[in-house]
Image 1: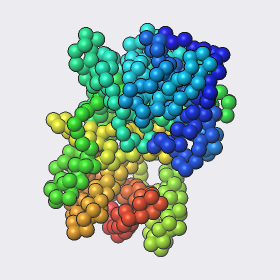
Image 2: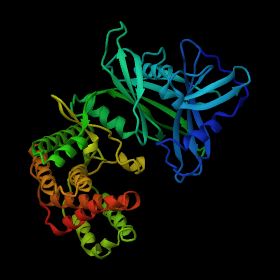
Image 3: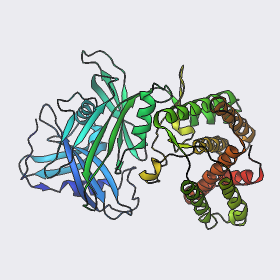
Length: 474
């Protein structure tokens, strides 16, 4: 076991070292400024050889409103880690141990091995120990679906909000085992992460529409205002499915070449309805209260209110948009249930001999956790996928304006709805109104996003708003 020197002097401090590094990370939410960090807790994993210090810092950014909590795992080494210069935060001087090289731990194989062992319950206690001066603790929970140890690992690049580690596994007898991927949640909130809860529920039910869940890591920390303790999920371990593409890339190729995609869209509709049915069966449904109905429509109206300032073309459509939103208050709603919450083609994998497999059940990352764990309308997921087909066609046209894939998108949308209805039942007029309103709301969200971030993509959601206002829901 590594020795913890509680009275050692460290220069620079761990928090100072992280501060200068964090602002350059893709998952850091406060782009454009240096974070002001305060430590809320931390915990340690043990290197069996006693050579590498392994510590996770739980840090709050005081300057953010609301306060954002970050998970930052680090490893401390007495010499540089070969091939890990890209993951080096810097060096610090330890009054007892001398110079220590500090690394972003997901890139360090010693950390990854101990993390996976903790999640799978293969450590003696199945939990990590609190860092000095902290009462934080982390506990692994295994689904019992896999055993083994990490043989090698690598970090996925390009992720925006999490860090995912691909782990090539071997059995305890050194035979090849099923690989897994650990998603490390970089931003934490008090409460259960819907990605863990929803995906674990589907996996436990035997659904093949999601990767098999192998376990998760949860932990606690001091509330940022010092009022007490908070608790949440820190990481999720699940089946890794290699050599596959997401539905967005598959659909783009089909749209660009004019290849009929309606059969695949139909199958995706079937898969979506099956996911919804399993979630309703395992997690239940509840009636949509008048308060919930009013709150949803109010949020839609509020979203539109911010649009004319950034998209003047929609300034004169306010009456039509409000009417489309108000119309859903006059019709009955289905019961609410847990859903995906941020459903689009990029969240689905095309797996040979298995079909469509959905990922990332965290919901819209910019919404607070209290909203993302609420039961919602299944039509929200349906509307999200309808918009995604439209976006695929629009992206192809932006890349080559000689290609008009609008009919391709219409065919996909119809087929997806037919596939969904084959499982969930034919929609009635009220369901069609709800889907149309939610698709319109999503398009208005896209207008705001594209106006701020990708103005050349703005015509895609603007055309969708026009179409949705002009066509009858069907």
